[in-house]
Image (cartoon, rainbow over all chains, first blue to last red; front, side, top):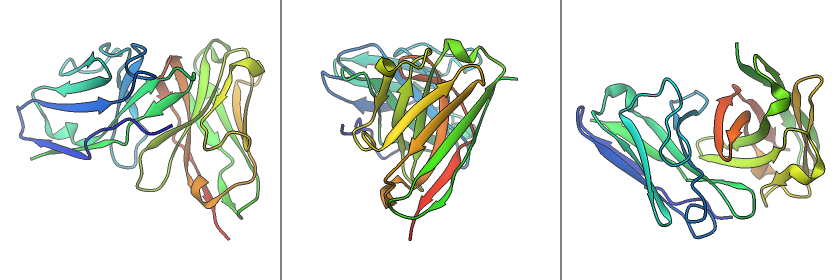
Length: 110
Length: 120
């Protein structure tokens, strides 16, 4: 069970948009529309920001959006704000009925 | 309010055992799948195990890294989730979170975590 592949870091300036990719296989991301994204600030528990590829939980800003193409899912954050600086993790349900996380991406707001 | 509170972490020697607990409140615990997820110091998230709402053995799943050593269980009457960890290894050192699974992989409620350190 290898982790889903995410870039180690991304950065952007306030107001810009950034996209974080999450690459899996035909047995996870490619098999189901059960991709989620989590935001984690230092010392805090993760927070669900996207589920089922492109659905936002109540209370999550519409600046966060998700998509999927084949075995790769993406998280886009538009109108970057200083408070968006955090670690971001993707996850996917798998054909083994387990859950895989990505290695995490550190977002720096310049 | 909706809350998950983990307990039971601590320092244990390699080969030892520990039982983690997670107390739920503010929602219908018996209606939800529940998971354990861990995070080693300075590292990413790793899903450990989940259990179906009824707690039947057929709805218990584990990551390969803990299969055969960890056992997940729940008591719906007590609104509690458990993780029995045996044959602990140094690589099991992590902050262990319990999380509510709203649907496959969508962990919408998290506890604050309980730290497990495996060291001689």
